[in-house]
Amino acid sequence: MANNETYRSLDDLQVFQAVADTGGFRAAARALGQSPSGVSETITQLEARLGVALFNRTTRSVMLTEAGRQLATRIGPLLADTRAALDEAASSRALVRGRLRLNVPAAVMVDILPPILDRFMNRHPEVHVDLIVEDRLVDITRADCDAGIRYGEHLEQDVIAVPIGPERQQAGVAAGPSYWARRGIPTHPSQLMDHDCIRTRLAGAALFPWEFEQGAETLVLDPPARLSVTSGGAAAAIDLAIAGHGVIYIFRNWLDPHFATGSLVPALADWWPGYDGPRLYFSSRLVAPPLRALVDMLAQDRRAGDG
Image 1 (tube, rainbow, N blue to C red):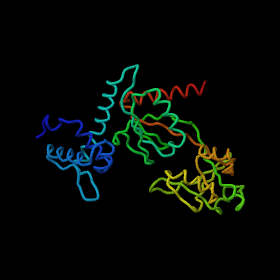
Image 2 (cartoon, helix red, strand yellow):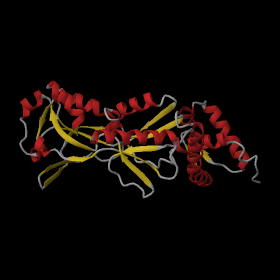
Image 3 (spheres, one colour):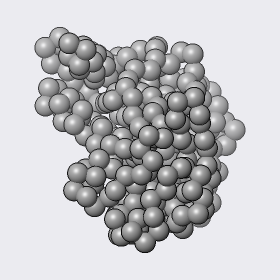
């Protein structure tokens, strides 16, 4: 029978949500800073109090039962709101405290997000920043995150999205001098179909197409890949392009430092496409003070840039 004893511990529900989000006791323990045995014991006690199994356990996996899925769906938003309310209570106008947990793609970790976080953490030393780096679009509430950063995906109507970093970016084509000397620099994107290409993709997803535009003309290519790598290995892919193993198509801001040194040589620059930069997205329901402080700083940055 449900009673106050059943719901006595918000911490137990936080542990349950962590296991549900990460899919395992060890991963949840790492996220929570606890021992796997402690997490397992908490779940066992919670299941005993509820009188129902929340997870099906095997030697290889931990899966939510139907009762567990229903509980996770209901309590995810409640836990996020509770944490935000506690952070707000702990903060004052003069000092922001609490946790800022962001789900971000690897692409922004190279040169976009670090300087932003540097300024933010210097401004708000009492905020603990927790970064979850992955490339799939997630439900930030279910993932116990305050906000996410993504490029151009469709977002729900109740989600707010604001620019973070450059409002516009560009993709570029490049190869090492030794490669161009050996194979020749193309004069039209279609000629890339006859080159060794270094391609990137999201984990478990198709290779990113190579898109080009010049005036009103657009072109989308699926060139042969001599090497393909997930987005987390982009730095190694650039190194291999520098070493002369093929042509790479990737963020121009990642290529510019190598153009400056001559270790990479651009090609087809008048065909490079532009696109919207990354956006910080978050629920409009309740914005915790650490996230509000980040959003306010980004707005200040944009106003300073406009000035």
